[in-house]
Amino acid sequence: MIDANAWIGGFPFRHLPRTDAASLARTLAREGLAGAWVGHLPSAFWRDPTPGNAELYEALAPFADVLRPAPSVRPDWPGWERALRDAVDRGAPAVRAYPVQWGMGAGDASLARLAAACASAGLVLVLTVRFEDLRQRHHLDVGADLSAAYVRALARQRNDARLVLTHAGRELIEEIFWSLTEQERSRLWFDFSCVWGPPEDHLATLFRTIGAERFVFGTGWPLRLAQAPAANLALLPEDLRHTRITSVDELATRGA
Image (cartoon, rainbow, N blue to C red; front, side, top):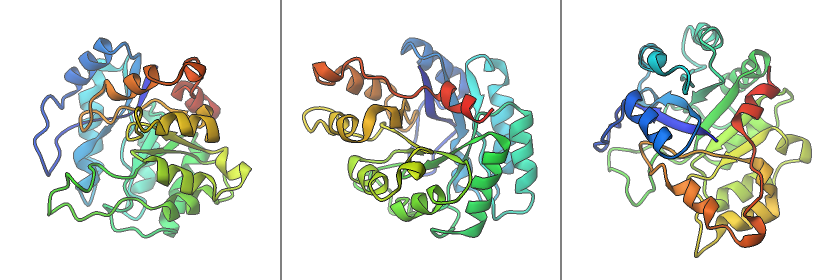
């Protein structure tokens, strides 16, 4: 399995140990994961993520066989098209965008342009609902959670953009999924790094109602424990133990 939701780099609001690429590679090996799509965590909070992308590419280069870059592209910033071309040239399977942190509203035209450009370039667009739960959040971390409106606006664009939504809970996943048409849903996937397993069994409920094929494996490392999603899969009820989620390699290939 490949982790669709990992970062390197520090976090502004609390200390994170071992945020470097070598530590991530060791964590993946320890957990039996084949690789990861990796973003640069500080870039989410920078006005211009371009320097962060340069740091990301340099840091991942020694681990190119397991760590693939998912650079940040801010579509309302000058030169974003060049950042997207760089991502393609570097072999990135996906790019990340953080519209809430960058002050972009739901339905922002530039975000729609990014989604369309990702579709043309064969890249997956990864969006993050939140970095930390409201109960943990530092008082200076004023960014709201990504709402269903953002995701619906992108999913309803008439292009072939493939979207992965990370760090969403059951309620938000259901709100988004059931408000979209079948065709719109077919271009949207969720990771389950923030979905509860037992005793609430939210993950089992989602697999039964929405379908496991709408989910990809993501850990949220280093903000979250890398073991959590694998544990939730292992704790699924017996009838769901062999349910197949979507491989991110398969997801990336669809855009090739």
